[in-house]
Image (cartoon, rainbow, N blue to C red; front, side):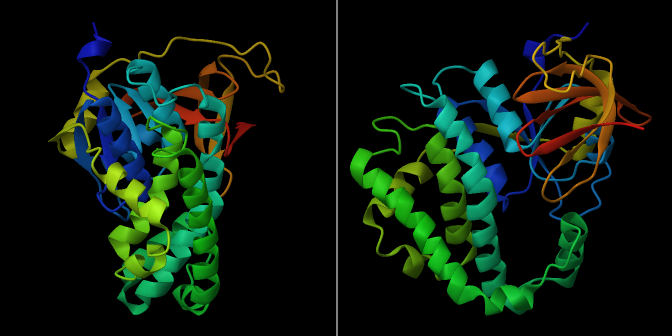
Length: 312
């Protein structure tokens, strides 16, 4: 019999990943003991893919035979399992959660173009080819380099919003305590700072952001230990999924537990993961699948930013 409380919280990530940094910060805020499984920045990932069903964006959280994809889904599950301290002090859960649609999409695309446009010929060809497969289109470093002036303009506008909010509300974006809003907004600041020497110049005028950046960096990453990808796969294979079945009576498309569906991101990395619905709600969907290597697995996805279609 499985005992969910005894299963380690495993994060499949790589240290340079800005989306993984979000989750590492959540571990820090909540002082969670977690297990780090370092994956390669590019494919293949032979021990992870059997568990995700082909989903290849980073990070992925694993608890036994339950696999959580996308930071939205991971953060929601961590808040459920480790409610104190909350990521939503004083409320603001809706606004803080919705901020990911800004930080992870338009702000991130602006930031990633600025990073790789600035790195230019330092970007390995193997990385470019991998990201072209992930994007389903050209990863055009030359075009990113040409667009640097515009990307700097836009990055400045985004950071200006954060600075204005901090100046009015500080020391955190929602007031006196750190929240998910801070974690989402910090991701792209961290990415620039850890990737480009020019970050100091880009952030120099934003005094409130720079002080906040120091506070964010002091949060830490919780209690981290390391594990191999092979060990994590064996944990998944030996466990039984813990997710309980649950229908959504208000699902606008009438989906039910047991329906066979494909789930894929709506922007990039549009690889469909197929399985039968175990549980669904307005914010999440969990599907059960069987893999010859990983065994019986339940894979969890958010609803915002993902497409769910009948398999057939």
